[in-house]
Image 1 (tube, helix red, strand yellow):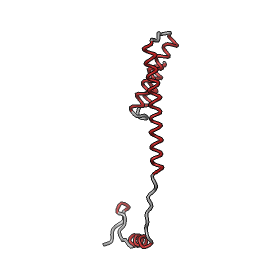
Image 2 (tube, one colour):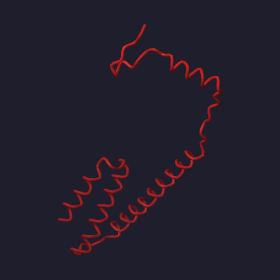
Image 3 (tube, one colour):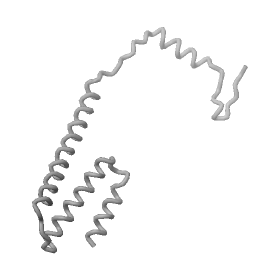
Image 4 (cartoon, one colour):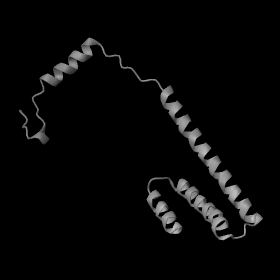
Length: 116
């Protein structure tokens, strides 16, 4: 039953996370299986298993930290960039408005015709 729910949760994660995040979740599944096997079925945990789980958990922590740092730096770079201001004169605005108001063409997609 636990394996079914574990695989179902992995299926629900497909498409919602990046490929690396999905692999990290897969390694977490392996760690959970090893720990639950030790707790529920009294299977032997060797030094090799413990070291492997430790490396996997440390890798997950470092990966999570790196993703957060990347997100924060991307947010900072977006907030630092100033908005570009346009310096239109009144003459530019009036020319744009007059060209728009005197245009006799209609939108063809809306069923209007053009006057020639």
